[in-house]
Every structure is written in structure tokens, then in C-alpha cells.
Image 1: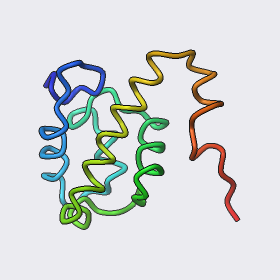
Image 2 (image 1 turned 90 degrees about the horizontal axis):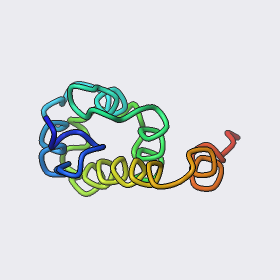
Image 3 (image 1 turned 90 degrees about the vertical axis):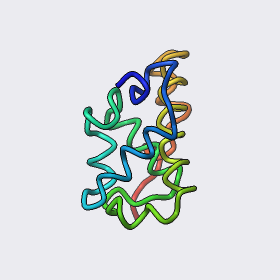
Image 4 (image 1 turned 30 degrees about the vertical axis):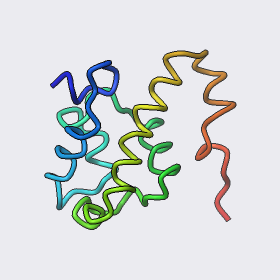
Length: 106
């Protein structure tokens, strides 16, 4: 389980991707928040990772599995954002770096 924990230095992108791909019928946003699949991910990290990788939150995992780069990038982004949060002032990080929260819907 430690290799799935995005807070762990032993986090494995390949293992996380494998676990996510097994959830073919579920929406990617729900899988990313599932603590049994990726412990440590919350709403902000999920939103940023999906926004940055260009994946729609409601896309089914089975529809993304063929495009491994986007899925892998999304998982990598989750880990990167978490590391950035842990290494900086939380509020400053949100204000300065979170892209999806600075957008407005038109």
C-alpha cells in the first residue's frame, strides 16, 4: 500500500497506474479520490492533476486506458502537486500555483 500513497517516497507511478486501470467502469475523478486506490489525494490535488493533464473529470477510466500518456501524466501530476504543497506555504501555493482555481467559466 505504501507504493500507492502519494505522500510516500516509495510512491510508484507504475503501480498507481495499474491500480487505476483496473477501475475501468468508474469515473477517473472518483478513482483518484478513492483512498483505497490512491491514499492521500484530495479534491484540490485531483482537480489540479486533471486540469493540467487535460482529462475531463467524468471520463471513465476504461476510455482513457488506451491513452497511457495522459493517464500517467495525471498520476504524476498528483504526486508533483502534493510534493509542492508539502514543501511550501499551503496558502501561498494555492494562490500562486493552482491553475484550475484561477479560471472562470464562460
